[in-house]
Length: 190
Image (cartoon, rainbow, N blue to C red):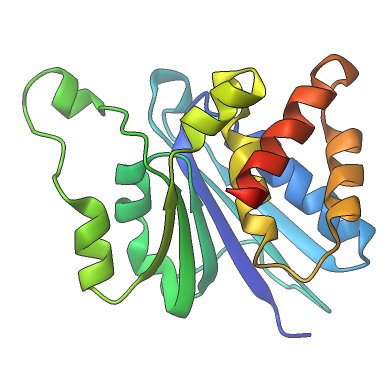
């Protein structure tokens, strides 16, 4: 199998590291060679967080270069737009429509860009956008956006739902398990 590349992008504190851990565990359980690389940036201050997940028969590097990502899973709309140059032709962007103002917008030095979904679509990108925050809140917590997005990503993988749920059970503390499974299901079926 040729190497597949998934970028998980977001803002610090949104749960992108748990999402990458879950995806890595799922793929490892399936017997793939995987490499996961995390780039935190200013994650504690609301800055960008990027995680690369690469899998296949044999993966030699954990890093995804521009034009190589099969999937970009974005927890925030501007982060989706920020990383589009990494998407390969025919790749897919799965994004939350939530907007979180970065520091330049908060201090008034810039404005949050308008019509980002329309701009990505006009550039020929295949975008699957959803209000993952609303679905996470429906599942029981705004912090479950990560599982909503993993549920949505699962639609594009030929991996049975039971295997995803098993990986969730291995990755999430027991007291949050049912809520996270519900969030996953809502993302999958949205």
